[in-house]
Length: 231
Ligand SMILES: NC(=O)c1ccc[n+]([C@@H]2O[C@H](COP(=O)([O-])OP(=O)(O)OC[C@H]3O[C@@H](n4cnc5c(N)ncnc54)[C@H](OP(=O)(O)O)[C@@H]3O)[C@@H](O)[C@H]2O)c1
Image (cartoon, rainbow, N blue to C red; front, side):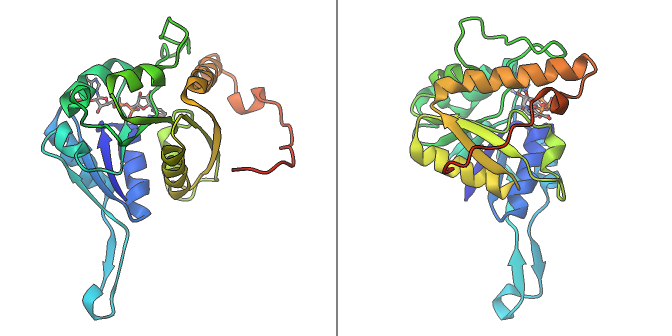
């Protein structure tokens, strides 16, 4: 799959590397081309053993920097929006989102719009940050995902986790679920995009507990899953 990543920081690099290992082709775009190039280099590239044309094997995908954020998102099957909440309007503007550059594209939103260290949600109107992002990217199929776990979760060898996702478009949810699996986790679709507020508040609670010195894992009851069919 062709994946664009907007953002050049910790989460962009960690998820990009995971997707390259899974065989995807990633293009990174940021406000700094130098940082985009460094992030792409840090994501690595596929391993080639021998000559693939003569019985050798090529595994894994590729990573490169786009010349601009707009180039990084052009023609991609999915785009990850891995910038800070305050940077979202700028990077979407640079990517050409207002003019429809992301129309029809799966836009994966891992953004935590919460007060760092406190965990309070910064969107005062009660809607999800993901819903605001959808307004800034007309026509994009926004899926909330990957916002709850720290970036190092996507390093090789970590114990698998469940990644809740939310979105309005079934095909986009299917694509995002596949990318969750490719990162080594199990997707759990919880409903439409308006449910993203709930997912975002959950991240705020985790952040609040961590900064208050508590183990967030110990604050969630260990309740067995119901024996119902899962998507
Ligand atoms: N890291 C995690 O463990 C983690 C986990 C879950 C979710 N998230 C979410 O993922 C997103 C990225 O987090 P991160 O940890 O990767 O952050 P980070 O390492 O600090 O990187 C932040 C990125 O946002 C960009 N940015 C900030 N303001 C911008 C602006 N005005 N215009 C364009 N780009 C701008 C930065 O560009 P410059 O470098 O040029 O400033 C950088 O590429 C955040 O929304 C965060 O809440 C992070």
